[in-house]
Length: 237
Length: 237
DNA sequence: CGTAGTTACGTACACCGTACGTAGTGCGGT
DNA sequence: ACCGCACTACGTACGGTGTACGTAACTACG
Image 1 (cartoon, rainbow over the protein chains, first blue to last red):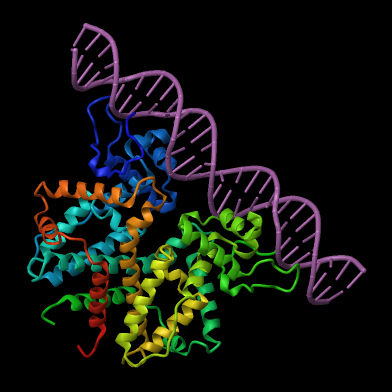
Image 2 (tube, chains in turn purple, orange, yellow, brown; image 1 turned 180 degrees about the vertical axis):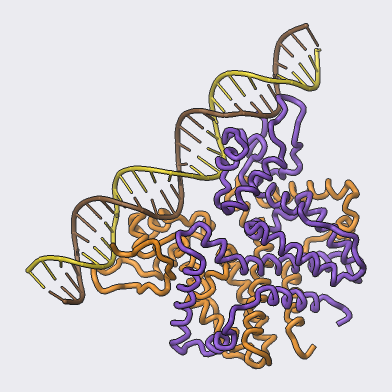
């Protein structure tokens, strides 16, 4: 028997090609690229084993030679887009570097709106994630303190970015598979919210909605959030 | 036709009982409680329409009278556990109050480990979520500044809590449905990570793993994260 | 009192992940 | 050189999912 299934495994520890047998028709990169293409175009829920296999032009079950479980396919996808991170020579200004990292991650997530859903600490150690982590640590060299604290800073920043971009994309991604538009959806939710506020049970929320009449500048909110978090870690402040 | 399906809707805007017809056999609270019971005991993935209907003792399709889509069931669940929040008279010390809120939310998520996955801004305006939000705003009355900034603080804090508890629960929740134990899974992942680090390609990560030999105190990490975020919002610091 | 709108629920459809069996292929050891 | 085995490829099938639709019973309103 090839792989005793009842054992945990990390896809990255499994060699892509292993001596014996006919040479595989596709590489991991091919498969990841196909899955990413589908997810970008039709949303993460459209990424099924059958659909990816069809995109590649092979039988469904052939995919299982490359990807033992669907979860591993997700890991492949996350790693593939993590490879889009542009890494640079640290500038010496850790705050500026981390801001740049955060913005890059945000852009990445806007390019691949399904990425936040796959952002789990479990997927945190794929090859490209490791390169990314090492780069962040390099940017933080000027910051005094133990490596552990720097890891905490990176985790916090990643968490913030993921959370905020999730918020930014939430309704957009949700309505992708629904038969009505995002605007219709929002209109209904806002109407309900206003009807609740009109009861007078939530005076402070009412004030909040009075003050913020116009549309919120999500980019500015993101920027403020980053600044505040970095402030919390800055020893010189 | 009862409900023209091709319209967006908010479950909370739909009346629970509407004049005509036989009186419903179950309340929304009944249904939410059943779903929560299943999710607590068997994980969120075990919460299917069929399973919940079986738990209630009714036919599968009867559920759709109460809950037009599965997503609404999730919204019911999130609201139900949000009702477990204990709300108090604000103390006047906004930092202390917000810390208490954060810890309470963390406890809530540990009690219902599936909650982080349902934490989406889309679900942010259920009845109990509104009560919770209003309470947070009340706690922040002593903090100067516009309501908008306070909303941002609350969002940030909720994001942090969700992110960190997700991390804390990640492997535990993942291995729930898998045929091997969490320890086995962790061992494999750590072994792979060490093999990668041993290549010398990631010197800073190597240092991080040297320094943090022992197990990480997740509670302390959480506490530090909160403090830092609150620092970022504190005008007196 | 009819009747319209609701509840209840069985059946059916399309899709999902994936276990399993079978056939073909080409490298490794003898 | 050649055998055997590990590997690739893939069709079929199973048990699950969300939910559209049709039908029968029931009740409050006009």
